[in-house]
Image 1 (tube, rainbow, N blue to C red):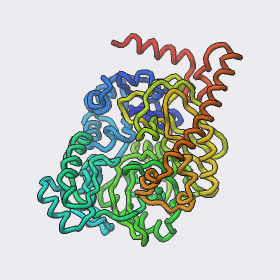
Image 2: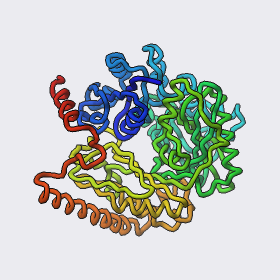
Image 3: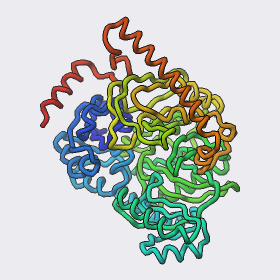
Image 4: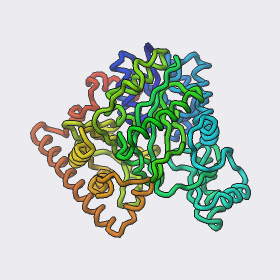
Amino acid sequence: MFKKILIANRGEIAVRILRACRELGIRSVAIFSDVDRKSLHVRLADEAYPIGPAPSRESYLSIEKIMDVARHSHCDAVHPGYGFLAENPALPRACTDAGLTFIGPPAEAMEALGSKTAGRQLARRSDVPTVPGTNDPIEKLAEAQAVAQSMGYPVLLKAVSGGGGKGMRLVHSDAEFESAFRDASSEAMNAFGDERLYLEKYLERPRHIEIQILADNHGRVVSLGERECSVQRRHQKVIEEAPSPIVTPDLRKKMGDAAVRLARAGGYVNAGTVEFLVDQNLDFYFLEVNTRLQVEHPVTEQVTGLDLVKLQIAIAAGHRLPFAWETITPRGHAMEVRLYAEDPANNFFPSPGKILSCHVPSGPGIRLDDGVYEGWTVPNDYDPLLSKLIAWGNSREETIARLRRALEEYAVTGIKTNAGLFLRILSDPDFLRGEIHTKWLDELLRRPNAATADSNADETGSAVSNAAAIAAAIWQATQGGAPSAAVHECDTPSRWKLEGRRAQLDREP
């Protein structure tokens, strides 16, 4: 097993990985930009090193700086988390050149499966159903428009190197095509450094269902079942759950077999996700492969009892997977919501700022993966994800009830969050029946009563926030001074260690 792992990321996923390292007895090395100097992952890591200014291209996207820290700190492996360089084949190649192990798939597998068009080509060769569309990138506007006309509208323009809805445009007619093509190309270039697009036929009201896979270096590839990710806002996942309310044992087997077949064909190793669209007839179509750990991996962990991060590390160290998929028996139901520093009432505008107080939920079936603490300032330079709140129950109904209860307990002051939106979603009859699709949330937010519902949700959140403020005042009156951040689980390091870290940071230029 490794002795020291560099975590090439920030926020809650960096905290998640370093906690796994600590349980395995592996030392962790954090990196941080100037604005992340006081971030939680920096405070919890065994070692932490600065890598540059706030812009990600000058810090978290700088492979050269990351490799310099890895060599200087004598690491033997690098874990990329998700986002940033996690799906960039240049990082595993740089690790190989530096004599380090990359905890993820080989660069060749990233190129074969991570590119949208290359993945579609491999899926078709592997007899995996695909959405009708182009197999190769289309770089010329006139050529792309001709393909759209022959395919029939509506169509989706999608970035070859895309993800998270960036570089994606839905086009209903010729009149919209030129501006949509240029906007998607520009956005793709800004987000991924690659302006190339491809075309897909747009499926009406599909569900987004993904299969978690694991593959070791000894030829074993397993499926860990599905996650339902259909609740999305502008192609960005908002709520994930496992298992899916609509997936039958037969469909689960077919989708799992297709995912494993595709992974084998691409020479895949480590953790990955094969994403599908499922139509109203329960026919499924390959969408893409995420060649990394997913944001929503905790829901799979909750229903399988597996630790995917530890398994990633073990696979990278050369260990065999100790199980076959037939031996895995999922238990119960899990659901995750992504808590963001954003204001749903103001078009989801980011809400950076200092967290004045933070009351986190607990109790039966509740898990919180977070990267924040009371007194920390949320920067405006990165994705505003604060925490992931996960609930588990014996049934979907119990899970929803627990998640609602946890959201009512959750309170953060100083910034705005989207917690109230989730309370609204979890009360909606369509959601409770599991009658959702990828455009469902966008439609919900456009309903005439949306403003009233948002106001009610905000009032619920405000009541909980007021309770947290009262608790803080009581603490101050009885203990003398502000509530100590040490009462929060994020402050597990001893006081001398934190003071030593601050002194070290103050000495740095």
